[in-house]
Length: 214
Image 1: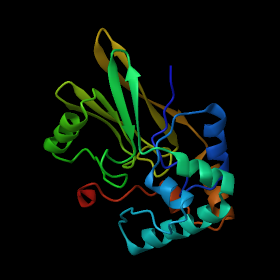
Image 2: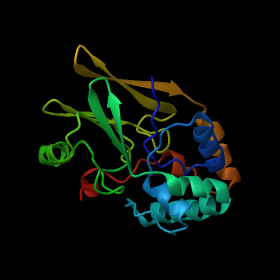
Image 3: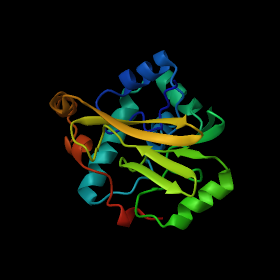
Image 4: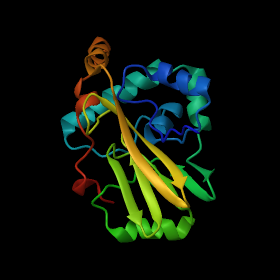
């Protein structure tokens, strides 16, 4: 079996170098998220949307801290990440990206109209689309095509749980199963406080879905 990472390796968390180095050690295929691009290129902004000015200030502080903490070698690795990866899955193909195939900052949330997903399926021609960015677990079907978001351990909709998705092909049909593992969220929160960052960076959900439509 293969392991894929759908981006935003860094940002909003207290251990950016350690996360990068673990992915590099395991050689996990990884797509570039908007935070990865911002840190790797020292951009100073992520293109994310925020629910309040307070949330935006906390995220901006996290971006400055993360950019300062990440080593030059690890920034180089972030810059090498591709925006999408196409991979075989059985006799089908899967396309992995962070936000959408068009923009890393687009939110493919559950309340987006069906035509948005149908257009991507028609444009790309894959049978499985894997993405992140919204932090919500989602298995959205567009005809025979699946759009799967495994969720996120940071800013989760499942506090204290690290989620992922297992996908495969059974008798010519895509099968999707969501799983979670508990982690000690208090330890991460303590490390955020030690870095003088807002604990809400870990626990506050992303911008409300309806407002995130683009």
